[in-house]
Image 1 (cartoon, one colour):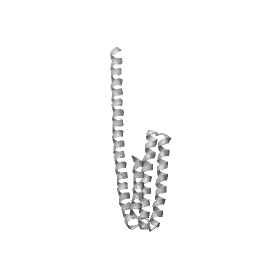
Image 2: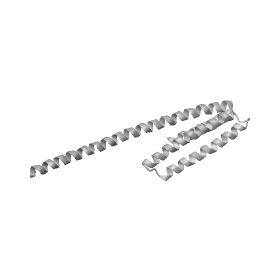
Image 3: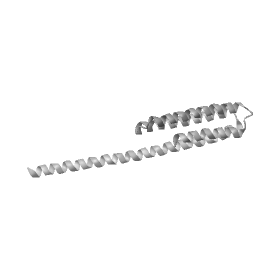
Image 4: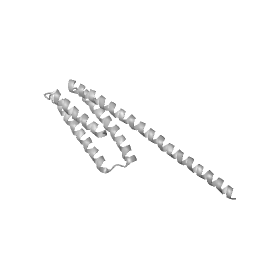
Length: 147
């Protein structure tokens, strides 16, 4: 009888150890997948910033409403991407409300800067250097959002 219980206990222990290894393996795999997803999101945000920079330079040079509309679309796309990533992070890491309220105020400032930029484009006397400075401020706020 003693031999049977030792054999059963040994099998239970080995099964338990195998389950623990599987769980650790799944966590490791999950960490790798999460890391790769974060890298992809970061690369996408960097690409969007590059597109915004190029469009901002074009906007300051040509001052067309078509270029302004495209610039605003790019900024909106960036904000959408950053906010969706931020919400996922907030759900998985449960950040405090103070961090999200700070990001909301940055989005509000970006919106105000876009309005100021629109007014600058409409004002033909506004210098290109001033517009480039404003575009640079918007870009800086966007970078500040995801760093």
